[in-house]
Length: 270
Image (cartoon, rainbow, N blue to C red; front, side, top):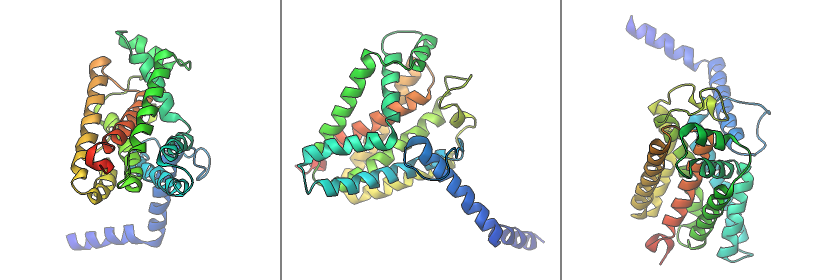
């Protein structure tokens, strides 16, 4: 009897119609993730699956890293690594519509100083950018450019996988901190359900690719863990929650930190 039910269940999920439905749901989630954190024109406008798309954030990072990596290979035939690195950073900003940069600016404005939680959240919601926001964006982009400009060994591979790590960091913020705007906000949808452990499957992508770095993979993965834990620890101590802006800031801090780490010592080719 058990074998009969198992066979019927297998047939149910392997019929052509069910396969098509599964593929359609999968593509909807992928397209929703791409539309949410990039400006890449893919799929029908308005596709939105706030909980289903989260697990595909690392995949979107892989897409971004692939585009930038190919772009970098092309422009290195025209300009020096320093200039090419600057153009790479600009391309990343353009591909994401400055979404994470905007989050970094708002987070810096809100969390700087000793303001109470509600005041900090109100400042982050303000569309205007303050002095600390401008400073944070300048420093973040400068660190990212400086780190990338120093990388020669494994340059294409690091350009491919570091954006994946950066977008993967958002999963940890969603999983381990409560949302700070119960009444709504840009990131409210992704916090409606507690993120399951199985949603972290995308981390397999950067971790597996990092093995091609040799022993440097250990440094890169430890660096990722430390940056994410320290940033989320700061968020927890500062206001005890997270917002969509703070997820964007986490992405930028992780990306800039890993590029800087990759420029150190043996990883940069010295």
